[in-house]
Image 1 (cartoon, rainbow, N blue to C red):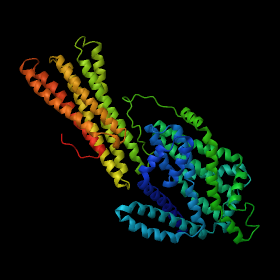
Image 2: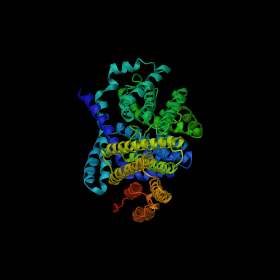
Image 3: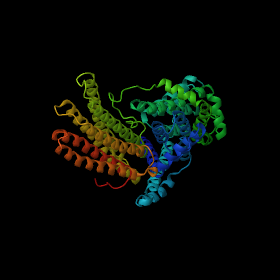
Image 4: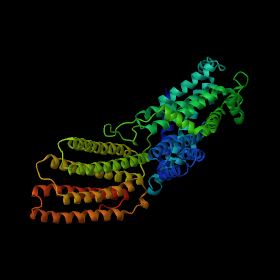
Length: 580
């Protein structure tokens, strides 16, 4: 029981250490890695190299895939470029196996304690705390590998006749045996949700001499498929591009497993020859010490196979990226749905390969979509005003068009409320994780942005209700000058919304915030001018007081909307809130 708990506990430490290392590296280099990923994918080969380097840097192919899918959704990468990046990520992630094989072959436990000591000192220094987090994760990883190695030795699996008899019951020359262990590796990885943990178990079994090399490598092949099944199931609720990227990842690994099965033994023997492992040696043909020394090389054989397999598979498939893109697009077709009838977030994907630091990019793109939707809603309000200005035959076809448009605006108002709640819920779940100060500040800014965007939706709906009340009421119509002034005010407001969306979809350093302030000043001055003119027009009996009140309600709502736009811009720019 003690050995079993040591095994399970060390596997838990291993997974936690890898997670801590990956998150710390993302905190240190997340924004730079996103920039590299966007800038260095000009063709399939640079995309592959970029995916490999980024994954090796953050020790997480999941993190690379998250960034890649986010860029595809944002239009910064094509799906073909994303596929090449994912191919590179498959090579980069093999570095983990080499780290684990080193830990399984040498007693590295003592190295963990200096890392713990230095890490705890750095964690309490604000400037270096992410390096401290990384060292702590690395120390947990090293310590876990050391414990796994000693636990594997304590279990004496290579001398346990029951275990040896179990694996010996499978015919090593049978193709069916290879398929059984391949399936077993996939199922274990899917259940444990960690290919690293299953790789560690495989290394323990092989290094102890209990598990023959061919079955061990079949388990590794199954791990490659099992890890893609998890991401595909998680992507089922995600958007089309995320599902295509996940499916391309699965296709890449399944294709590789299929072709490697045809050259399985020659390929494995070649890798064993590189490492210096004697595949013909058995416990019966050699003394125990020689047999165990030969078996100790198996962890390196597994790492070498993992790397060789992914490099060879990438070399084969890199030439067929356009064909793979067409294939995944054919399998997973775009859903054509009316966005008014079916609200769903486009970029935020519940559960799909989330990593806290990189989730901010997805939220930013969702907020841009929210912002653009609010400008479309304002465009509908302008159209509603135009329809209301047509006095003739208002009870016939024009009334139907008016009511239909008003209903769409009502739906948009409900959508804006839902988007605010869903994005806020997502940001709240992300903020529960350990984040860098820069990311925390971004999340605070984004929460303010979505609150102000929802207020823009409310302002648009208030204007639509006012126009509808005027259209269906018994009051006199607006005079032509009032319609002209309203359209001019709405044009200024629309310019402000356009500037806001330009900022939301671009870079802060290239945006001139003074242009937004100038438009706001124009709106304020025009509102004051129309307010004074409205009083004079009522006094001159050009229209009734009731009509003038409705008219000024619309003007004031436009001015409020302009203030909300400024608040969104200031939140994104990181400046103080300007007094209205």
